[in-house]
Amino acid sequence: MLATPAVHLLTTPFPLIDRILHHIDNLAGLNVLTTMNWAHQSHNFIIVLIVAYTSFIYQILLVPLILCLMNKPDELRRFFNVWFMCLFLGAIIYYCLPANGPASILQSPYFIQAEHAINTQFLQAHQHVQGILGDAGIITLPSFHVIAALCMLYFTRQYRYLFLPLL
Image 1 (tube, rainbow, N blue to C red):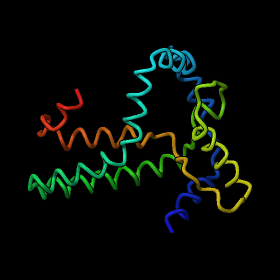
Image 2: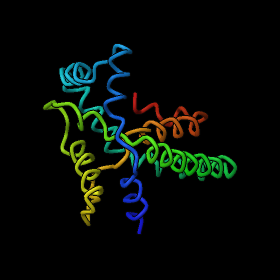
Image 3: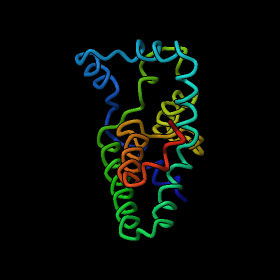
Image 4: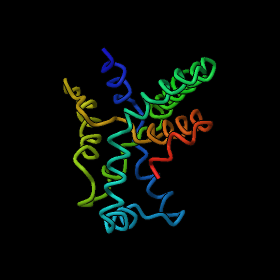
């Protein structure tokens, strides 16, 4: 049932903007491949990123739970309002300015299969292939991981002590 809106997002009539974003990155002095190479020089850094990424769904589920346990119904309501507003606005941005991420235009051994799958899903949706949605995400801009991380930080800012074990 939820796959239908996602497929509609993928079938946006607008062209991908990945090359434009890559050009803007280059103008700003940012090189994705160099950054990826730098990041992969430290095995521990990659492990931290993997743990953060794979625990993402737990983090999203924990924030409302923390707000409930702390008896903050107004904050909980605000959290869900902000979260759904971000999802809605992000979907509109993606529909009008679709981007599949750097893996769709650059070559690197550091891109994982899920990053390549995003581009494949987009192309399959435009070729009207059924059953395209797998484990890969569909939206790379705006980054819902960044939006969610900012939301979670904002709504747990009063409970910094809960995150001391992460240091």
